[in-house]
Length: 197
Image (cartoon, rainbow, N blue to C red; front, side, top):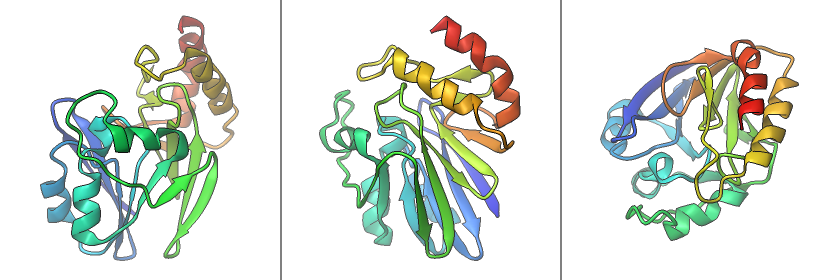
């Protein structure tokens, strides 16, 4: 498995391309992601959203239509794709597969496990592919996603941190912003973040 990463737009939102056996999955195509994606994929299978914030889904529809591929989005963030609640002028997009909590998908032989970690957004989730966890804005290196935005929930974030602290296996974490980290590394600082919220 190969992973390509590109910080896109003013918020430097990480768009990822996961390459496995000549096929690709596109994760969180944000602002100005389209041209980079087109330069680096040949056989894309799907677009995977970790959550619905505009800087992670901006190029959803453009890539969906260009490649005729489906979009997977957590159920509780679907409204953000359709209604532009932050009034950013986000292009509307339509999810083809609605992810309901922790759910496993088989996308043409590639296992894609969604883990539900609400707090930053109602549907905030991580995506596990092989031993790599794409954490969106739930967890960053030595930090967590903000919970002071509209539709955020500090209480949900605390519960999500508890759930994440129960992970017994170490994975590489590829966050929505910044550099990569690991599950075990972030488990060391998460109790302090939980107390801070």
